[in-house]
Image (cartoon, rainbow, N blue to C red; front, top):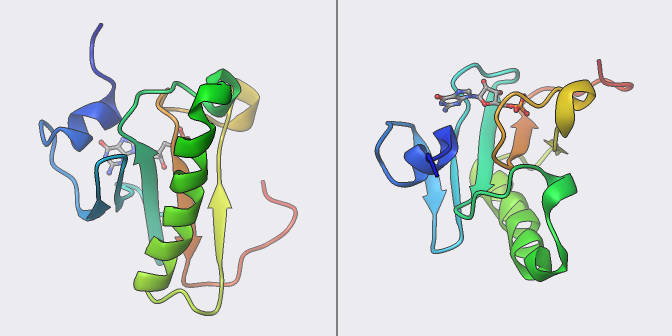
Length: 113
Ligand code: 5GP
């Protein structure tokens, strides 16, 4: 099966500004930032979207979220940040490889667009 865009970034076949990586997850700066800090954190495992994760992914998903908060701290987002997971066409998903957006560096609005 062809690798996803984010698998290619994880495997260093495409360049990106990686800010954190370990055996399970990779975090890198979004190419089209929507906030002063905009990082994507992805599992190396190519789960297409959160709706397609299963119970066997629970540990990985927990580590993904915990690591998102840790990356936010290391990026200096003490005033706060937003985590976003887009799912499917109405959710605004463009890349079918699960990713959590870490957005910060400005006050966020609610409701989101
Ligand atoms: P989605 O809309 O699927 O939740 O978010 C996909 C995100 O991936 C977008 O914010 C988009 O800017 C980002 N993105 C798309 N292609 C690339 C790329 O090649 N490199 C990086 N670093 N980010 C990308």
